[in-house]
Image (cartoon, rainbow, N blue to C red; front, side, top):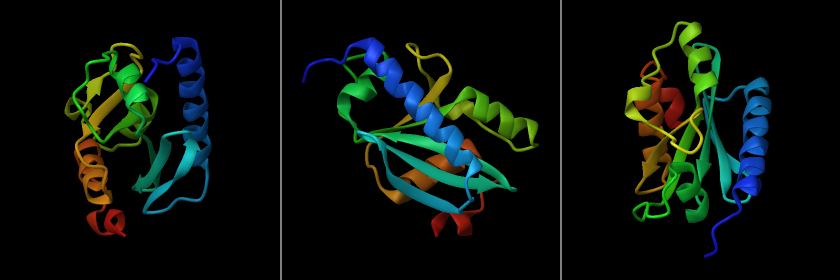
Amino acid sequence: MARQVPTRFHEKLDRVALAVRIARGEERRHFEFGGEVEPGVRLVRSEVGGTPVVLSHWSYPADIAELCGDAAVPATAALLAVDRDQALELIAAGHTVDLGQFTRSEAYPGVYYALLDYSSKQQIHAVLHRLVPALSRDAAAA
């Protein structure tokens, strides 16, 4: 598979960031694994204490390699990403956010990610709990 031109990927990342911002302003759900907002990218929506949490779920190997800054990323099913600004907003709202459980993208420093071996709702739920421990278990499992 040919590697994407970084400029095009940066544009895709910007469009995903815009979709995340829009989703944070929409009606909140306890847990939703939505449809694609860009090819290979879906949004995972949740909330904690009335504060929206929206992560992007990346499934194309070329995108994962680009975000990780390494074309030799081990085989993985997906990547779940959150931007630093959203994490800081959650912290400002009084919620614990453990970015130490994630890796900071070398290529895109404002992005934190977790690699997923399996891209199931259960694994995404577990990753959300690692990021925001106060997330309601019952609500996120819905």
